[in-house]
Image (cartoon, rainbow, N blue to C red; front, side, top):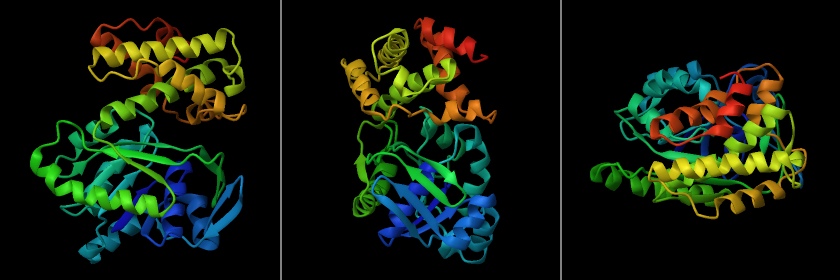
Amino acid sequence: MKYMIIGAGGTGGALGFYLTVAGKDVTLIARGAHLDAIRENGLFLETGHGGFSVPAEACTMEEYSARVEKDAGECPDIIFVCVKGYSLDETVPFIRQTAGPNTIVIPLLNIYGTGKRLQALLPELTVTDGCIYIASEIKQPGCLLMSGDIFRVVFGLRKDTDSRTRTVSMPVLKLVEADLSDAGILPILSDQVERDTLRKFSFVSPMAAVGASYDVSASAMQPDGPLRQTFISLVEEVKALSDAMEIPLPEDIVSINLKIMDDLAPTATASMQRDIKKGHQSEVDGLVYEVVRLGNQYQVPMPVYGELADKLGF
């Protein structure tokens, strides 16, 4: 199995690190100072259990495309897409250039519905849905900081996948499941991936919306108070939306998400919030504004999302 990971940041970099340590065939697509540092010193992962470095295969999109053009055997079996939502469209031409006819694309983004959107742009390939649970970020070029021990990858075929594609793809996805497990990553090959990715979104979107709107970390949402209640209200609005979309979340999703919130490090923030604070491009459109648009589409009131979307510049 050849793995190509587009994006070597907190999610893609950590994924590549673990798979590489497990002896899997992995190439990271990176750029700039981060790529230079990986090439020179390997990829370093800092965790609560210490720091570890591994020689990692990394290159630019252009270099990987040239490699495939020279030898079609270099086409990846699996492409993990681990970029920010606003960069997703930029990956499409590259995926077309490097994928083989049987390559499977697994997007692991925070934004709900990414797989379906990417599938429409790549009708010739099989694109799953997916999401990732990890607290990790680039600390400095070539170095990732991973907080906590949670590392879970959820992926699977959507319900609208035709039977032929399902028959061809499932054995390959089973191999991915085994490789992730070998690498010490918890794999969940889901038969209800729309629900399971929406479940993650129901946490990360409210957390990002509250954090960015009020410039606070998890510590402000952990005790009882107005910001915790705002977080709860946002989760309830996503739950109402999920019911209207006929992808119902668990009835106790508020309690589930509060438990996740309370288990976070008090200093934890969402990457969207950090990007906004730095003046960088962010995923606010997909994580916040899109929820308001979906509410209008499905005629579900979104008063709190609407308020925070306006606060964030919708």
